[in-house]
Length: 420
Image (cartoon, rainbow, N blue to C red):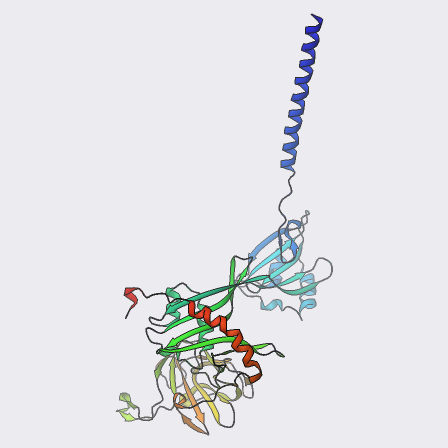
């Protein structure tokens, strides 16, 4: 009997120990789960877990001072901040629609300590005023992804890109590459293209714009034109686009002073106008129609010799390019340059308007050669400098695999309804 009692006692003790052990394991598991650390979140060079984070957008009428005041920063402190960082960041230039992030202390005071202004998806400015006041300009890390595309023109380059859901910035970059050799206002249905380019991504997922076009092929009026980006000046780290024979695609003058516009009236010395009784009234310029406010570009490097408003010309700009060539841009809504200013090819010099004698928004582009107005489309204009002979062997070797890659890209076939 004693033996049975002793055995029962041992069993009870063992079961009790097992139960306690089980309960202990369960409790430890619960504690472990409850005390599991949250993931560390970093952005703009800060561990966001260490702050109370406020993310917002600059609203119309907002100012840096007003935002700081909302979050408890005194006017005296705001003045100190703006005065200290003025050489790095002008707080008066913050724009409505831009996002910002405010990092505040996690204690009961919730004191604002860091202000981050996002200029765009990549560039941002940090103003840290925790101890000393420091402002720094930074960039988010980006990843470059190489992409390929092809298409057949049905109406315009932009419309084709839109129909294919391609980034329109690629179209703009292609227009820049071929701006000296193709009149994009006169593309034909059936013209086609291929392009290899790199696109920028933040955190591998957020699109942040186009980096550059590596190479492209454009077939206009059945004439094929290759373009390859190649570094032609290692000292200044500059690159340009060359065809397969190492000829520079750049010309001394752009074919048009406005991107993606249409020619509404050409240079014509025998033009007759019904309004004036069909009398001959020579048109010594080329009209490019576009919406009011569209940027007008300098077609070549030069010095601004006139920027004024006069009679039927309205507001206009005239540029002296060299001893031979001048260009003039009429009917602007607003000039963007002053007399004596040096401008580079592609710089914005004004905006489309309707000042002076004009029946609709356009720029009248006048081209002067040796002091005489001529038709720019009938001039044998000079090219930019070709690739140096010393670089040609490296260039030919570089483009060989890229050309094979371009040639292997198939054209996306047109849909039946797209064929004109």
